[in-house]
Image (tube, rainbow, N blue to C red):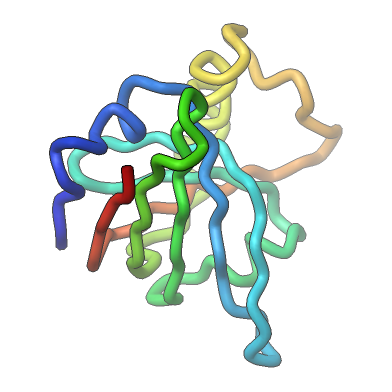
Length: 132
């Protein structure tokens, strides 16, 4: 596991930066989606609902890349390449609520659909580099 450069930790911990997450489809083509994320214990966590493309591509061991762009300076970004360490339903509802608190300032994720099942995905960084 790699730790991102200290000069970019603000993008992971302090700012409401979005990540563009790139995954690989079953046919080998790339897929990119903007996502909310958090960073704890050296692991990037994202959240999605079962049935979405991300849920199909973010399986355990799958390769993934993230570009996290500074919301205050779009020319400054952090790139992380890694692999999916785990995918779980356990704690996924609480996780999406914590992301809603970070990004929207609300206690409960307001876009949950009836019957929706959430997944929390842990991504282990393998490489990390930034650009100012």
